[in-house]
Image 1 (cartoon, helix red, strand yellow):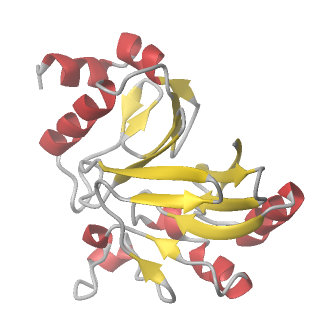
Image 2: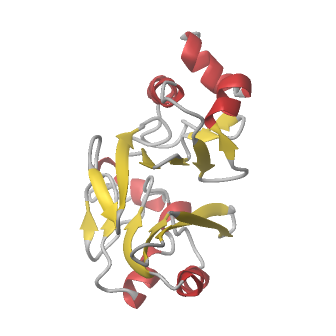
Image 3: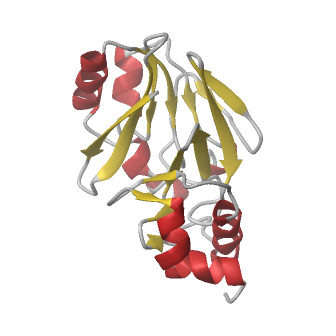
Length: 207
């Protein structure tokens, strides 16, 4: 397993390439913008794209999807259905509707990236449909868990109580896992259990 990261878009979204070196395929996580640069990065790995995984439906994480679909028409995109608002034009300003091969995934699902297994955890709070993806010792947390912080809960579908429950679930995972957030610096779960005030509050049940 090899993971490459690049920052995309005006908000510096962390887009990740999850590569299975054994089978030379990869998944793209949260291509929020700059589709041509993302595609070039995939080409540099020598891997064939097999999936696009979205941790949630906000436009700064989904903005490059349409252009990548045009480049890779046979590659499916995965997004939790709770972040799709087909009948709410106001919500669509933040959660743009995606077309093409959009597939639902949810708590307990497992997906393959070559010989790698990606497990899905539902971690609502930042949005109703936020998920965290685990592959080996890597956690793709989207905007749920940040280094030293957590995602906002004041957007549509956000909920601080659900965020605290999601953070508590993440804190209970065993091992010193890599924390690969949707923005800003990378971290480790052990470090966040020591210093992240939101994670500490969630662990103690004080919010």
